Amino acid sequence: MTETQVHPRSVPLREVERELLRQMKQLQGADERPIQRARMANLVIYCARQERAVQLYDEIPEVAAVHPARVLLLLADEESPSTELKATVLVRPLRIDGRGFGFCEQVTLEVGRGAVHHLPFAARALLIGDLPTNLWWAAPIPPPFAGPILHDLSECVQQIVYDSLGWTDPARAVAAAATWLDRVERAERSGRWRVASDVNWRRLKYWRRMLTQALEGAEDRGLFDSIGEIRVEHGPHAVVQAWMLMSWLTGQLGWKVRGGKVEPGVEMAWSCHNATGEPLVRIVRREEGPHEIQRIRMGFHIDGRDSLLDLFVQDGRRLAARVEGVEEAARTMTIPPQPPAELVGRQLSDRERDPVFRASMGVAQVMARSLLE
Image (tube, rainbow, N blue to C red; front, side, top):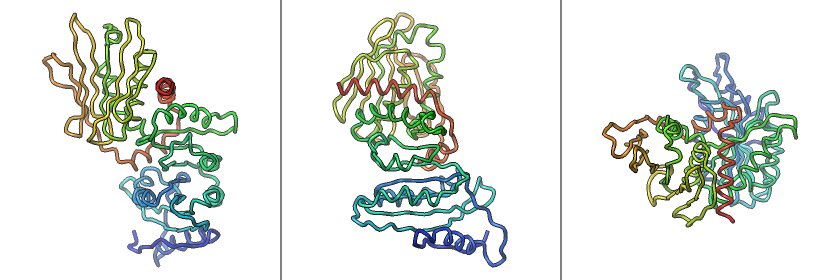
């Protein structure tokens, strides 16, 4: 690959395509060797803060390495009063699957808070018409509360990717999320396929797998009905992640949520109903630690005595599961690194609706409403 480098350049919106071609030629070099444009889709990214845009700028090559795309980074700077739309163009070298090189086209469109409504129209003018379009909602506000800007941006997209990690006012956001998901994915309204995906659900893949393995055969032995309490401990900002895992597990166990209570910033708890009693689900916040689930403790009755299933993060790299009082080695599962950019890139390539996720969100909505009553 040529060692020629290009730098971001601001141009009028009407000059963006011409500037993309110019930078591509510059990277091609004097010998005019064939070049590869890496684009399986259009990727529109929306954020509302300069510092978040800087993070995204660094993550875009990692996302594009997993899911090559023409990238439109939209910044609605809530700190700026400007009404002028600024377009910045950059063609970036991209290593694809570790084998060869391609080039990723990136256009950053920036406006102040008074001109946010211009972004959807500017973005549509730059989409490649014969490619699918994905929207990565990288703003901190939950999608159900985003208002007209999200509606306008998603009008022509096939997938919306968002991340519930760190949502403030989680009960209200989760209560609204399932209804919003149903509205977004209702295909008959527009006649087009559309799916919405939460990166936070993807983070739970290994926890769900470990729980499934740990509980294998438990239903036949009547353990599901003997569970008295499930306690989940999580780090700061990970309450929705823990909540989603518990809504999934509650559904798997066949429990019905009866009521809930919350001590903000400390604990959420729900009483449930099963065939033999009223088990309790508790989500407890740790003051320190990674922004993720740290431990799950599940009390149950087996062989005439009380016991406890303990699942926890071991050495930061593995999940471990053990039953207290049983003399055997803990079952472990390695957790591969899950950088945010890679999670998003893989989600963009996974365009099928996930019925398990949707069912879990339905349970989560019931749990949320019980806290708000």
